[in-house]
Amino acid sequence: MALQTSRRTTLTALALLTGLTALSAGAWGLSKWSPFTDEPPPVMWPDNVQPVADYVERATGLEFERPIRFEFVGDTAAYAARVATPNDGRPSETPEVDDAIGRALGLWAGDVSLAAAAAQYVGGAPFPSTWISDDNLVVINADDEQTELSPYANAELSLLLTQVLDDQLFHVVDRALTADTQQSYQSVLGLAVGHALWVHEAYIADLGQADTADYDRAYRERVQAYAQQITDVPPAYSALRSSGQQLGPVFVAALMEENPALVARAFATDFPEALDQLSLPTGKYLRPDPLEPITDPPTPRGGQQVYTGQVGPVGFYLLASTGFPVTDALTAADGWGNDRYTAYTLDGLVCLDWHLIADSSDDADRMEAALNGWASARPPTSKALVGRDGTNLYASVCDPGTEARQLTPTGVAISQYFGRANQMAERIDFTGKPAVAECTAVTTFGRFTFTELITPNPQLDLAAELKQIEQDCVAQSS
Image 1 (tube, rainbow, N blue to C red):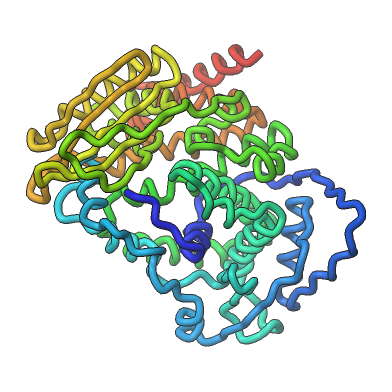
Image 2 (image 1 turned 45 degrees about the horizontal axis):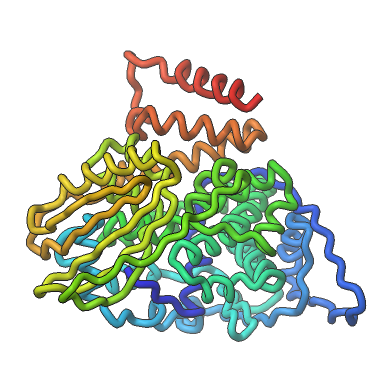
């Protein structure tokens, strides 16, 4: 659970499997003004990269500042060896504690190894192009610059070059590496991935019919291989690892509809602080909702501190979903204002003390109920306790051990959180009104479970219910 990140790991996080939500194309409309500077050297591109680079500049309204080196490796095995990541960042100094903290929180159970999960998560066949930032190098799985790239390879290259462009202009990788909290780190990556996916999906939408069919075929193969690759990864770990990627596109879509210049401002001067701002862009970012000031809980007498950390709103939802209805857990998680925990060992046990702050008294009521549900679902050996003082919430819990049986977040519960983001993105694209789309998605997923929304029920006129929800949200926004 501790933040362990290397530069290469950051790039891997930026290149995770792309999402399914299609967003409309557009432009930032950002003009750059750089007086009294020398004319930069022209940026030259390999022949088979030039069309994609041109597309990225047109779609974003931005220009690459400096040249990028390219290397072509046609042999698939040689390419995989060339771009392989040696390991998933710096090895944790406390792997057993990391595993135990997840069990204590109820995110996973049994003899889970986060190191093994991380290796599975980033393993598998590499993408057809890879950016090695330290060397200012893009490596492409092709014989040379005259080799025609497939529609899938071109689409992935559009995503990668957008990341390179954003890093040139806004130093995204350095911002991620210097992030002081896990939430800040994930939010930086979420913004970057969200923008790259926005360009990527626009590129796909502009493909011809034959190229679209070719892309879809290759994409399905990649998704199937990836699903098999992470079969043994705990669902909660996968959800936490990919949360920025899942939420970034809806954040970028909302800002684009409000004013394309807001995306540039987010990169340049106003990075989101936490994932709740990505998941609720109009309610918590465009309408500013800064993080509440908070300090790390003290280590109890006799305990030995291991590290401090942050669970975040997604993590809060996941653990709350184990002992509370998912609709209510999601509503409660939206009231998250900040949190910090201190992990320590005491009497041979790995434990943590956790301090959370809610956005309001009503939010604290919901979060307290969710925490009590979570605590009641923990094994007795977890010794889970919950307390409250105003909008401050407190919890203490210990690792129940690898033999303890306990409820952990399910795939259906995870779909509740990210399904809401997908619906929000779709409604933003359809209506062009981020506030209405957010209100509609929040109300819908606060009232219905993901299962109810995808399962036919003759007793429920779901279409009428959803239409009424959206009409009510339109009325509220007017």
